[in-house]
Length: 215
Image 1 (cartoon, one colour):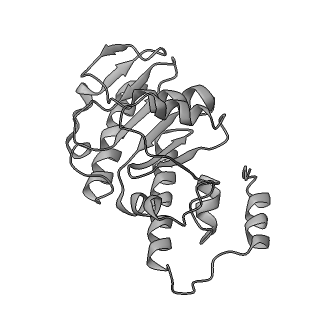
Image 2 (tube, helix red, strand yellow):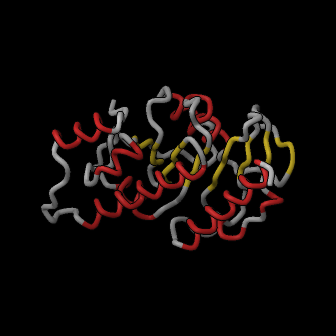
């Protein structure tokens, strides 16, 4: 099996799992992943993550020009910004997951670090998560907002829209965005209940132990 064939199948397998578990719905959400030659595979525009065909996934060159497959998601600028600013990025996953979106809409959510430190895994897999302001889907302003972070964040949540996570490969990006959604869910479930999260000292212990960028 070639690298491209395997990656096409992985994207479809992951997308269906995310869809089946309700982490994105309808024709929302998109995934991209980089091949070793620098080209990208990307889920097509208007497609459901639950019913992707590996043969129809878009393939783009490094300049985001379509080489084969169906037309890609309109969120190309968003994906491109992560590849440009974080050289270690091998994949980007974007969802419209319920709890992450809900947390992004609450007025007291910290825009610079929107996920409370409830478990070590949220810190280990995501670092600090920036909430970006509301921007129309597909607007190039999304890319500019990500570029403005200068590669310092691997995960953001678009207010009233959904999370976007970059990872070293499609599996790492998927695990991280699942952790983001689960932490947002925990934050909402425990809101106003007096739940005890990690202390500053515990956070710093996790940061040092796992060499996390916590700027």
